[in-house]
Image 1 (cartoon, rainbow, N blue to C red):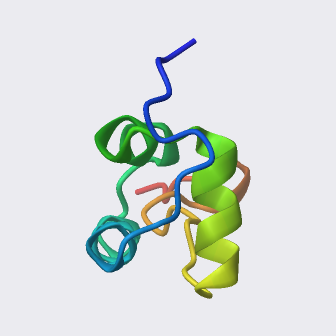
Image 2: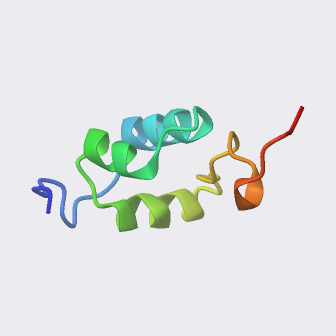
Length: 68
């Protein structure tokens, strides 16, 4: 488990902006959590509050790939 320096701490406007930028950049949630020193659960929760989608958009559903 990662060390939590921000446990219970309020989100700063800089952290919210970084979350938005990383979320739009298709960054994996666990990596965002490491960068912001938060848990993945905290990342999901704040993203939901800010209406930021964390769904990866570069993967096809059900592992389907185009065939030649």
